[in-house]
Length: 171
Image 1 (cartoon, helix red, strand yellow):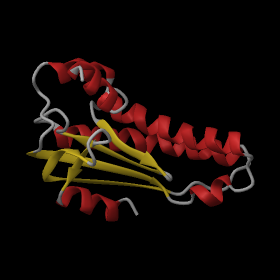
Image 2 (image 1 turned 90 degrees about the vertical axis):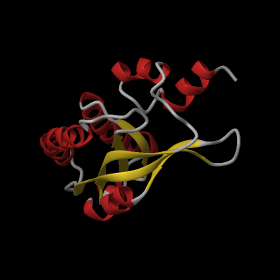
Image 3 (image 1 turned 45 degrees about the vertical axis):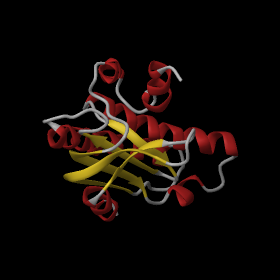
Image 4 (image 1 turned 180 degrees about the vertical axis):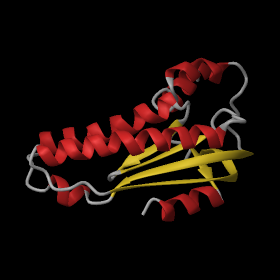
């Protein structure tokens, strides 16, 4: 498989466009390594209640708008979204590309999200939705990064303390 195609398929959706070209310049290891990372989780706690009663199309549009708001903040802070679903987003700095400013990037995204999500939540409420309850968490430290999963369906992931910690913090 062509490496460029493989890398774009796996990471094109995750990293900020400004960083995507760096993936081809030798900064990406797929076999696994220990990295200093920072992770941010943004959770929409009451997604079910807040979108209850909506038809499928507007309900998914509302959820996708939440994901877009988070992705935009992560992109601007030069992070990568690794997971998005069920009203939560997990973003990482320091992987797939090393970043000495990983913690600062995660903090910048969190500050941006705090302000942006307040506005977004107010707009949702004014449109007749219920109050949006959301949470943010940030953690940093050493983590194992690389591809996991069955051959042909592998996904890039981060494993370790910071990922476990952030899940509890975003509550």
